[in-house]
Length: 84
Length: 258
Image 1 (tube, one colour):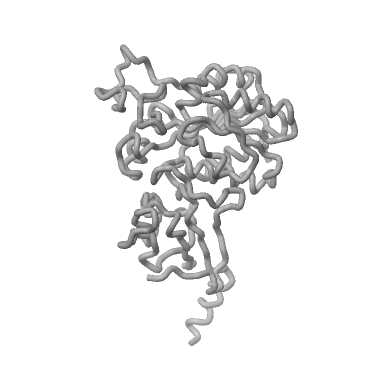
Image 2 (cartoon, each protein chain N blue to C red; image 1 turned 120 degrees about the vertical axis):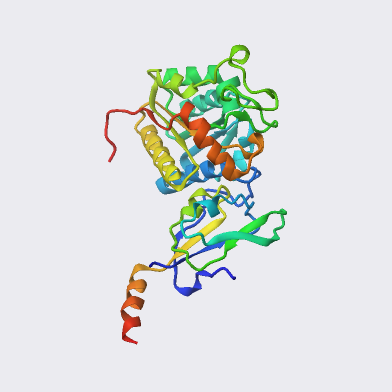
């Protein structure tokens, strides 16, 4: 499975939870702390992110930057791992 | 858990476009305005027309749209955004002109301007955000408020007998010969967001071809005005708004896009 990750601008997030509902991997959750605006912001709670950008598409504040493992690299790790 | 930094060889697949400014948006949590702003600016960024695009901001929640869009913007009087856009487009015909209006602006005070602008077939894009209430002033009843829907000025629900039917302005506009491309979309799911972005792209391309008025309605939520959480408001929108305002194209030109 392709691995990905997200970087969330904590001070921009308003904690509307739309990205949590949109995430098919259920890897986003609300923080316990509050940000400067007084909202509980969204953060990664599981490492199951695939970089599908669904969260970033529905984010009204464009707070989410998405990264994904390059395709070639994913193949490489798949080939190398069984050999070792 | 710490958010992973991009230093681990991951490639960036999605980032806020530079056509959006870094100003934090003043919209309520979960409001659809932010998504529509971003999609418009993504299309402007994709087509590389940042220095050739002029937006017209309305009065309403999106009155500060000019703070968030990194393009030339003009603020219009309440409801008169399409009239201002007409002027801009006629003086500067090589610019891409769009108006960004809510339902209080476009469907209430600006109905006259909207209908006549579309009837003249001005080469502009009209973006219409329909959330069924006057969000900026505190959730009062708008022309697009659904029958039976409770707002601060219709506390017992909208009564059709005394307050009239919800105004389907997009259907109205689609009847006019000046309208070239009329469509209705939403921003509640990733799929809907992708479709809306495609619609904006098509509308800007039609404007380049000088075909006539493009009208894109976005059925959006208003968590504060409807007094719901963002997720509840999206569900309520699916169950109540979509049956009355069905999504899809209302008027599509016969030419095929590449």
